[in-house]
Length: 286
Image (cartoon, rainbow, N blue to C red; front, side, top):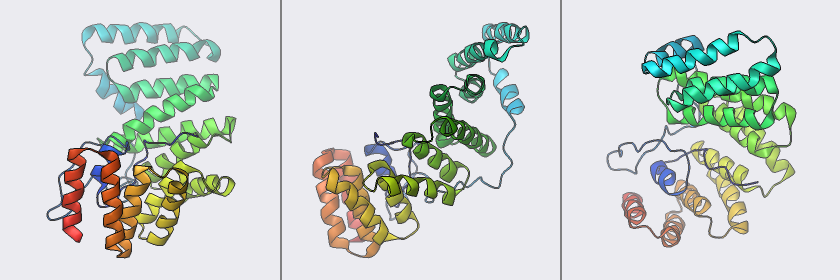
């Protein structure tokens, strides 16, 4: 299974991890005074989990107001085509077509909704994963809290349906775990999915990376060290594992080990901006 790079669980130096290790593409946030750059929220759980999700009708209504006149006509034409159909098999490709029209006009939440509707009618694992991933990407970008909660719920529904079709797909399990933890605040459900992967494959790299970052976030630094060392035994130059292992040692109070790993990570990444960020960070705690 290929590493899953869209899942972002960050510690104190989260922004650097996002920029250089291919995690979530959340825009850079301001630096905390006297500390390390901050990326997303420090915890994995969503800050919006108690919020009522937006309704699709409200999302679509708002999106329609932004459409140029010719796009309104395009949407109306496909909706008219849909209204003439009664058979779900025939409706599925037209819902997909409607999703494409909304996507072409950069109304991605609405597009994802219609892609998901089509995928559910077809019961297509591939298309469910496509829609679920689109919802997950939108959720991780942030925005309106109510819409973000809705996107998380939609993503979870798509991935759960996909796993009903193919329970062995670990990549989908990883994506579902991200949606549960980051979007729905269902941390334990997400962790159980990840632990299920490592019970079957203890050396699984993406699951160990994610569990390791979760362990850092919850202050379980010894567990985090074990997770990242498992990855580095297989991929000695895995900079993501090396970086977070350094963060785990820092959390344990073993500053010299942390500094050595950060320095090694710098050499492998070989990027002047990364070097500067790491040097500033090291100076803040050594």
